[in-house]
Amino acid sequence: MTRPPVRTAPTGAVYFSLLGPLTARLDGHELPLGPRKQRLVLATLLSRPNTPVPVEVLTDAVWPDDPPRTARKNLQVYVSAARTLLGPAGHDGRDRVVHGCGGYLLRIAEGELDTLRFGSLARAGRAAAGRGDLAGAARLLREALDLWEGPPLNDLRDSAGVAEEAGRLEARCLTVYEDWAETEIELGRPAVAVDGLRDLVERHPLRERLRAAWMNSLHQSGRQAEALAVYDDYRQLMARELGLEPSPAMAALYRSMLGRGREARRPAPAREAVGPAAPPACTAAFTGRPGELRDLLEVLGCGEERVVVVSGPAGAGKSALALRAAHLLADRFPDGRVRVRVRREDGTARSRAEILAELGRLCGVAGNAAPPGNTASPEGGASGDRAATAALADAWQEWQARHRALVVLDDVPDEASVRGLLSRSGKCSVLITARGQLAGLAPVHRIALPALADAEALELLGKLIGAGRLRADPGAALRIVRACGGLPLAVEVSGMRLAVLRHLPLAEYADRLDDPSAALDELVAGDVSVRHRIASGWRDLADGDRWVLGRLAGLAEAGGFTLDRATEALGCGERAAIRAVESLIDAGAVTSPAGEVTAHAALYEVPRLLGLYAHEREGV
Image 1: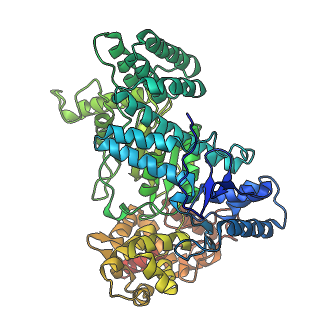
Image 2: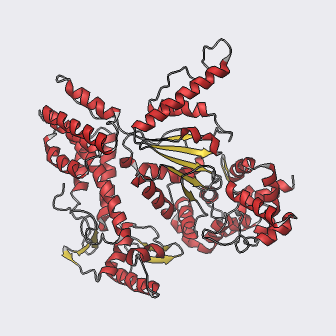
Image 3: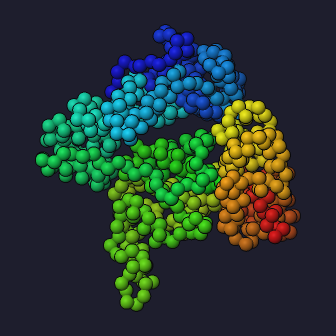
């Protein structure tokens, strides 16, 4: 699988490699990287290039169990050593390692880091395949694979954090190897991939796509008996280890090989995350949320949790996070990643029959009864519709029991909307996004999206208005993202608006957003309105919760409120106030501390823009 690596660093630049042991080379000569803890810090920064790495993550990588009191000072020493190794500034004159509120960020170019070069070549190869240039695709994918010198970071894997990053790199390599092998097979050169595929299947026996490529390469090399034996071994392994049959695509490949006169074909590619288009405000490149994204990838990737709920207010970026995770988990879900919205465009909930019908169309699931609304029952449609929906539900459960897919149920209004859709058995996982906490669902893994950190929000704003404009007035830019309350939708709308109004100084726009009476009017770009999205979340609240939120919004303007202040504002007893506040927490309209703290000691907050909208509604 590996060949001598192709190095691309320009003369005089340090070239780092993670695809094997951690190394740094300058003009072909290997550089000393210092003691082990210093190398762990460097490896962690390099594994997340051009992305802020929190100090806590670096601390866990170096001292997973019991960090010393001097941990932060020691990290500063290790980071200083990394600065010395990298040089004081990059080609554009900017510092290579910077520290901000999001952590340490290492700036590094593609030609200086093998993982960045690997990703670029892999993307180029897939793009070439999409254009029909199979020869070019095979060459680019092979060039990406040639960068690998062995298991990534194999000298530092006793650190759990580094081992986790190394595992993700290995998964990426396997996917690219599968792309390359399938391309070579399509080009009529199956023999070049046979031996490598056999070795990888031995190390990853349950990875179906690898095994399918091995079967195809053997079959098209004239070794049909061996190809059929590969399938039979896999079928027995699946039954013994998982109690499952191979996927329908794999079984179809086997049947095609039994017909000796016909060409074998690749299994149908896994379905991408599909469904109705994301809202316009979610079209920017994914930014921030590194901790939440890692949590999602770890939980869904290991297969131990089958249901994950990502919650947060309207505009918090739940859908963007879910779709990003779905794309990155392609190799973990060989039978597809499917996205279905659980609300209509007007914000009302879709019926279970509608959702099941869409899932059926996307996944090729068919019930044993007529679709809802087409019953032939002479007594009327109600009983027929119920029977048809029940048949669809049974067919959907049967499909989930036989497949390993990721189902994204997006924008779920309540627990009842999804209870009958969750898998009761098998290897399917469900990723739910919702404004409320959906406390009635259990057992599930929960991820609540807080406001973006300042550094993340500024990064998002900079992508839309340009880094130069951001640097020209960083103080005003910070005022803008803070006036947006760190809400990704609001930051994105601000960026889209400023990208059109190039003449508008950032300081003037920040002044407008600071004005409580004008902020929501300013957060409109074309047909994307923050007020409209917040109004949708407001409609989700019960009448009593709306009244409570209106009373508490004023308290939140000073940075938060305590239970005692809430009791006074609501004019009720302590127990009633606790229930009222916790009802809003459950609905996603009030945030509470992440750690355990008594109700009296907690400081509760209402997101700024939601509070402004609640004030508007109070005056209606």
